Length: 315
Image 1 (tube, helix red, strand yellow):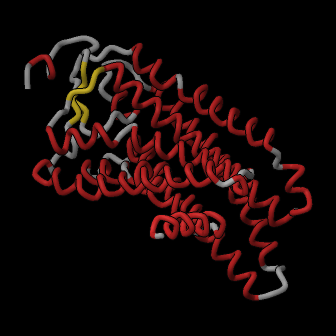
Image 2: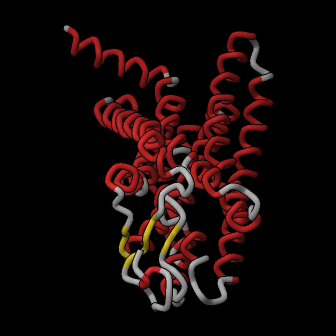
């Protein structure tokens, strides 16, 4: 490593991503499950988008939200995986300063967007189960469009200060990032200036946005579960309850690693760096892989359409 990477310089043109420090010898093996998860995520989410587009009977709010989730998952995983694999496979560790800040923006922005989509989907299920007679008049196409635009606007406005604040700070210590991608706090910690504002702003977004979203989702599913236990037959209760549990598992798979990762950056000084880096990839790779299965394949309409496509290809 040249001295310019470790001594006096100001605002380097590139950062160096180390990958997973301490596990360099295992980079190739680590890349195998990551690559497999990414391939499944791309295949599953594109399948959801294709099926919903081709089947007019699926042009409903629930499936529109599912398509939004698929696009968001594709952006989240694609914003990190290609560069990550280039590190693991080709030892290509350099990333341009502006590309690094762009990566932090896309990760955090689409994380906020995905959180909002989970809220919208929970509200859709709440109206469908608890007040089905008002579902068609409440969840209109216009409502879906406005909700989607609001989520994109919310994510963009709230996250834009992250790269702006990071770009205004001097970087005179090192340009080495001990990570596989440009995580916001991993970049901010390299600045040789006070980062209190970035730290507190990130925490405020974490608790005010994601915290509020979790509360709204919990309220929706509490009412949904109450309605489920009032269903007349045991089979209906078990079927609907199983669907809700799988949805909640998908939601928890997204929120728990994301919140835990954000808190570890600020308070987890005793957590092993390799564990932190590998754990940070869970909410960027596992939900995009699982969501098409949980929300798509478990949906009877999408499952039937998928089976018809396979049967048509066989004949």
